Amino acid sequence: MSQRISEHYKAIIESVGEDIHREGLRDTPLRAAKAMQYLTKGYTQTLDEIVNGAVFESDISEMVVIKDIELYSMCEHHMLPFIGKCHIGYVPRGKVLGLSKFARIVDMYARRLQIQENMTKQIADAIMEVTDAKGVAVVIEAQHMCMMMRGVEKQNSSMTSSVMRGLMKDNQPTREEFLRFIR
Image 1: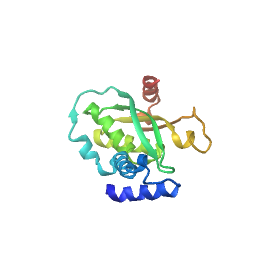
Image 2: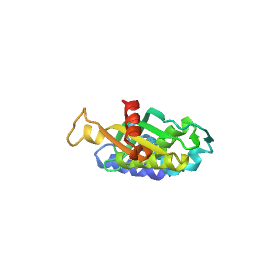
Image 3: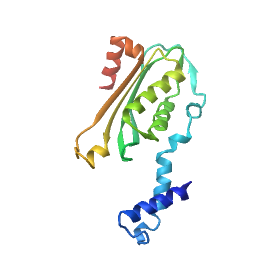
Image 4: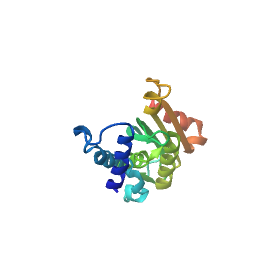
């Protein structure tokens, strides 16, 4: 797979007018191919593999919040990075998820060609599916290189997206509690 992707990078580099035989570029197609495979490894992962049975019985019924989970993704429109953080809150219903699994779920969806809005929904739905929580909330704040490096070139812009499920969506005090936690 790397070799096939490498050939495409070689063609792109030559198409922009560079000399692929130049010292600094000789190994770039293969390095870029390996980087692309890493940056899109979410396609080879499944929710079951990521969770790996780390769902535990618990009588906790109060909100749990995980803040500032860093994420790195690539927009599906320009294949440029977007970088940010994800905040997750959930109200358990007899089951809690191992803490590191939240970051792994975020990474699995971030490591795909993506738009932030869809990724936010995918993360919320995955956590709801795995935990059967009473409610789930996901907020993502990110800066998009497609907006900063090209096009309108707005360096200080960021985007915030949110998805609420169950109690987090239907119960205003619960939603407000989550939003207070992440402020």
